[in-house]
Image 1: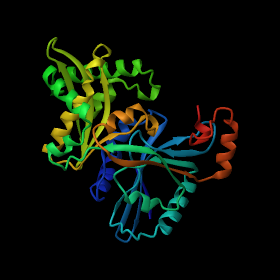
Image 2: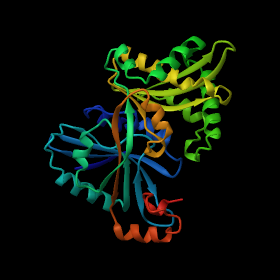
Image 3: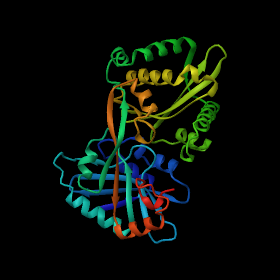
Image 4: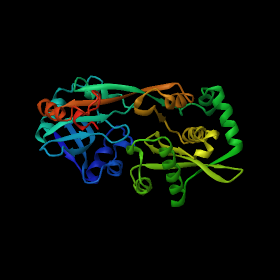
Amino acid sequence: MIKEITSKKDWNAILDQVDTYDFYHTFDYHHISKEVNTEIPVLVTYTCKDVLIAIPFLLRSIEKTAYFDLTSIYGYAGPLSKNLSINFDNFNFINELQAYFKSKNIVSVFSRLHPYFQEQKIILNGFGNIVSLGRVVNIDVTLPLEESRRIYQRSLKTQVNKLRRQCNVFTAKTKEDVLEFVDIYLESMKRLNASSNYFFDSEYFLSFFEQTDFKTEILLVKELENQKIIAGSMFVKTNGIVQFHLSGARTDYLHFRPSKLILDEMRVNATNQGFKYYNLGGGLGGKEDSLFKFKSSFSKDFRDFQIWRYVVNKKAYDELSEKNSSLNNGDYFPSYRAK
C-alpha cells in the first residue's frame, strides 16, 4: 500500500519506525530547503506485511503542463526502510510505486542516494537507473583519536598543530555568532563564483537552530593575535552521523587554511560523543577535484555517492525534452529542466 504524507506529525511517525535516517530525510530539512511556492515536500511510503519503505521528495509542477516531477533535496536522501531483508523482492514495491507515480501525473523521479545506507540499492534494484557520481570521504570516528589522526597526511598533522597554536575554535552560541558565519560563508561563495544554488539567506541558517528534528552546530575559528573570527563550518548531527554541511573562510586569512583546524576539531568532538560516521562529502558535483583531494588528506575511507533516475512517462519526457533540446548538455536530469 502506498501513502503520501505531508504533515509533520505523520512524517515524524514514519521516521520513528524506520531502522535509521539522516537529517536530510526530515520534515524540517525539506521545508527549510524547498523553493517557496514551487515545491511541496512529500514522504511516499510503502507497506507490505511488516516491511516499510519511505522515500522523501520535493514535488514540482512542470510549467505550462498538467505534469509534475519528483526531485531530491540538496544532500543525501533516498529510501529508508524497516524489516528489509537482503533477499527483499521489490517486484510489488515497484508496481505499486509506478501506479502511484502515474496517478499523480509524474513524468520523472530523481533522488540523491545516501552513501552510508546500503539497503537503498536493494530497494531500487532494477528500478530506473542508479548512477555513480564519485566518492565521499568518511573519517572513522569509531577509532581512538590517536589512530584516526595517524591516517592524516603528514603535512596535514603539521598544519593542524600550527593552527592550534595560532587560533581558537569555539561553538556558535548566539544569533550574532550565526550571522557572523553567514557573512563568512557568503564571502566565500562570492570569491568562488559559486552558482546561485549555494547562496542562502540568513533565515536559512537561523532555521537550522529553530527546528527540532536534528542538531546543528557551527564551529568558528578565532585568530588569537587579532581576535578576529576568520572561518566557520556548519555541521549537522543525527542518529550517529555527523554531516559536514557548509563552510567558509575570510579571504584575507586563506593562507591559514583554518578549515583544517575545524574539521579536526569536529573529529575530536564526534569521537568523544560516540558517533559512528563523520561524512566530509566529496568534490563539487561529485567530481574528484581539488576539494575532494583536500578532504581525502584526512582519511582514505571512501564511500560511493550515487543518484537514482527514473523516467515514469517516456512519451511526455521526450516531448518536454525536445522543447528544451538547445539547452541540454546530454547529462542533466531531467533534461527538460536543463538551464
